[in-house]
Image (tube, rainbow, N blue to C red; front, side, top):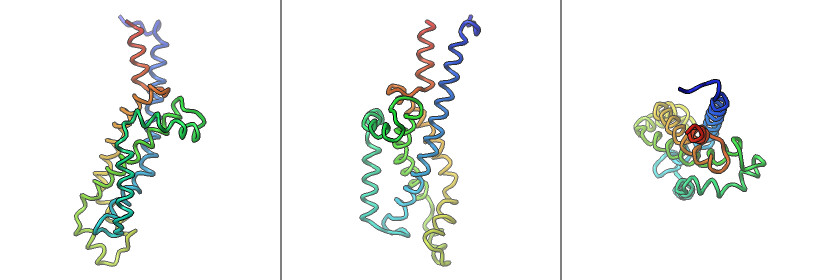
Length: 189
């Protein structure tokens, strides 16, 4: 039988690791949407035939997003250690793990937002333009409100993805729920 009193230190460690995981993932999700949402809007609106068409800019931005997305997270995590140290002063710990989690999620979020916005029927955009709406009004009054259910789903997908990424961040010094739970489970054997 599991004696909670004798193993209180294990319960404390699991609770702390759970809180740190929630903290890392929540902050990273928020920050990735602060940057990724506008980036996704720019990817859509500058695409061919859209309201702010700029093919060259769109291709360069799309290539950068694809290049960052294609790097496996564990390699990305190691590559940006110097940047993490520059931003937070260390590359180890919960706060330091937020930097690579956020930077890895930004292009992921941008593509999710782009996909959500491309689902909007062109007729709605055309109707807004025919009524005299400018680009900002089309974005804020048509694109984002119409895509809101899909954008909300994207937040859930991003959060789940970041929980998985946080497991890898644990190998580079970030504390996370799975790392502590595994160690506690092994120590109980």
